Length: 131
Image (cartoon, rainbow, N blue to C red; front, side):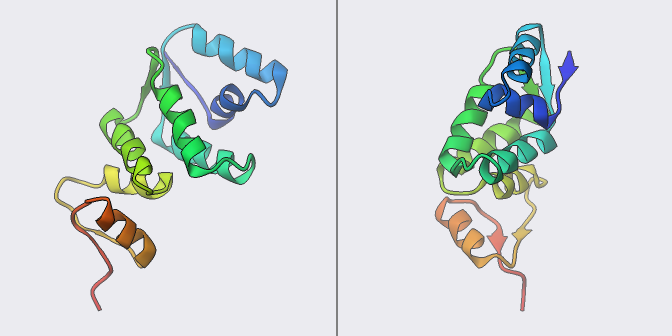
């Protein structure tokens, strides 16, 4: 199994550097690939910040990536849940935070917009900090 860095994933998804993109495709075709949750988060940030992808395009790219039969990710259930939350309007980082919390834990944020989006998405135990 080969664990990959963000730059390898970005080259695979964007193809912006033909030589590196070809190497990334070859690597992904060579056997099992493991991707850390931090790599997924950083990939989302790079695609939005440097490539101008919107959240839907980030979601679609990551969903295709994680849908490859030879790709495995750290804590696959929470990564899959985070992708599902993205469809409901929660951005990737917040979705990963929510889906990675321990079962039953309350998630508290000063970001009221995020709390409202999470509540509208049916996520339980998300709130503003107590006054």
